[in-house]
Image (cartoon, each protein chain N blue to C red):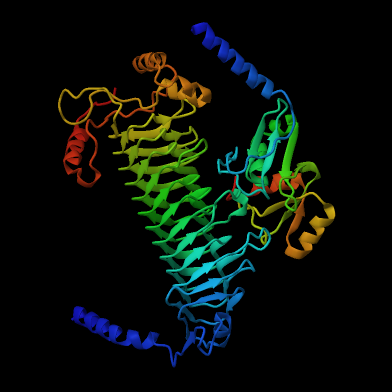
Amino acid sequence: MKSKSIHTLSLLAMLFLFAACSVEPQAIPYGQANCTHCNMTISDNRYGAELVNDKGKAFFFDAAECLAAYVSEQPELQENASFVLVTDYTNPGNLIEVKNAHFLQSPKLPSPMGMNLTALADDLTAKQMEQKHGGTLLTWDQVLTAVQNDAKFH
Amino acid sequence: MLNFTKRLLQVAGTLLLPLSIQPVMANTLEVCKTCSYTSVKQAVQQAAPGDTVLVTGGTYQESGIEIKKPVHLLAQNKAVIDGNFTGQIITVMADDVTIEGFTLKNIATSYTRDDAAIRVLQRSNIRILNNTILNTYFGIYLQNSEDCVIKGNVVKGERGDKTESALANAIHLYYTDNVDISDNVVQGHRDGIYLEVVKNSKVHRNTSQDNQRYGLHFMFSNGNTYTYNIFRNNGAGVAVMYTDDVRMEHNTFENNWGAASYGLLLKDIRNSVIHNNTFRRNTTGIHMESSSRLDIKNNDFERNGWAIKLMTTCVDDTFRLNNFTGNSFDISTNGTSQQNHFENNYWEKYTGYDLDKDGIGDVPYLPVSLYSMLVERVPPAVMFMRSFMVDLMDNMEKVLPSIIPDQLVDNQPVMKRIDHGNDRKLAQVLRKTEGAPGRER
């Protein structure tokens, strides 16, 4: 009896190990996962963000500002990460690398964590949205600085 | 003499009051199928400031009604405005507007426009009373406004198999102060009531249930009060985040059940009060993170998975006179450092004795079990629950604490379940024991 349970356990353990082997972005489980930084349920599919570390473990965030706050607190996480991703606002479900993303910060477009950050994949779309809604376009590094300097959200 | 003058002024005031609020020559514009006005929009456009637009029943296929004057929009006989998925139904663009008694329905999901049944933009003194709002994206949306009343409304979304992103909040307040939200029923939306940067507002006697995310959600909203609400069957009950000075009293948090579910989620909150609430059958009663100077008193924690998950980032929180009954875990934490204070709670799992019969247990109670620490670190370990080894481990650890935080302790556990309404006798006992020296270990 005992050896059988050990057998099952080791099988389970192996399953977990194999599941963790592939290092690739995972779809964000909206409505089920909680944000790694703020613990809020991730729900708005225009704003989800994700970090996949070098071992393939994915951390999910409800907004770009939460991802930024999390990696600001632990910079080594971003340095060692395989993927650091945000959602393209115009194409929910499509994850893009933060380094290639354009961030529009505009009070006309409130984001889940109050910093009004909208991530956009396309350069031209970003410029059009900026003209339409106002605000400023930021790079990821500027977003990190903005999050660090934000008083109400840290 | 002074008293007399005061009385005189009062009498004069009551006599003058009806005169001052009586609008000059207010008309009533009636809307029905056979009236001179057959559309609500038309009547609203024609109305002069102070007029009443009275809709006496029927269904109207309308949307884009813009209220630009202070009018009273009143529906009788369950009059319906059906937006027919053509956009926002009522937009309030004037101060002093009342919208009362309507049934508003059918608004499509719109990711770029955030359409609502009733939207208020940069206005004050708006009253939204006794409306029924069905199958909309946002229900009631107040933005950059103040001094509003949202009372007696029913807002129901069609949750069905929709994803959370296809739903928005039932009552949504954004940069809005001094709002009274009471006696509403909100269900089937993303958040039942959502407050972002809202100050000095009251949320009373609402029922928020079956919402996909939270029953009530605070973001950056200081100085608010919520009492006598029921939060049932939501993704999580209430989330209070990045907020100071909140009073949470006499609420019921129940059946918030699921892997990532809470009765109450506290993240980065300070100087707040949690009194006389009931947490019943939640996966986690309260999850607390980075929260300090909270007073948690006279609450009942019944049959939760975890009554309280207290992260080590919490400091200076006080837990007094709470009842912990039938929870799988009373308190769980993620580290050994503890700077919070537990006193005079009733713990059903307490096995100590009371030789001097003063109602206070003679040995301290350590509410964190070794097993709960293990589960916190290795969640799958929960499958060994109620096994013999776990009991053995827990009992050994209780005798010789080495892993569990021994500062997290109730030195004066109460022997009997606390009756919050009538604890005068207990108060006497506690006063007596406070005087007694050296109860510390």
